[in-house]
Length: 145
Image 1 (cartoon, rainbow, N blue to C red):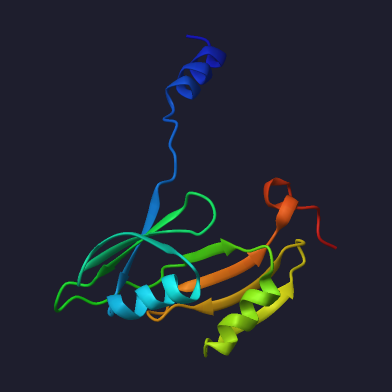
Image 2 (cartoon, one colour):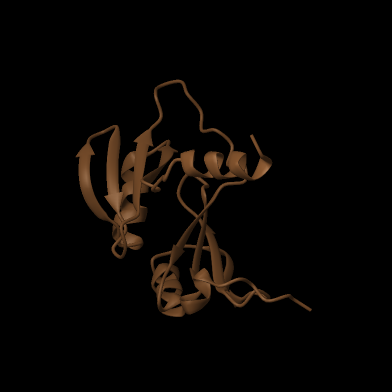
């Protein structure tokens, strides 16, 4: 079989996946629920207290599941994972969170690639980036000098 038709066959058989949700394990489901629902504005889809809650972002279709650790288990390391949430008014959201006692690892700052980011952690130490990319979100980054 010619190389070109092999590539076509492989490409045609790739699954068309749609991202569904991310699962975060937590030491304290109530604290995580307060953080994501009360502070970040997620909506509760379902709860199976005291073990599980499934949340939906206030905008878009993204969902987040938070799951209490089983007794005796420990949180896995972050392993380089950071959750990204876009907002139209990053400065306003950051001020709201600071007023609620949230400490930022980095306050809102324009990054070299043209997106404005603020970094913080949730109650279990999962890294969070709140950002504003706007129309740049689906564009290639221009070379940085």
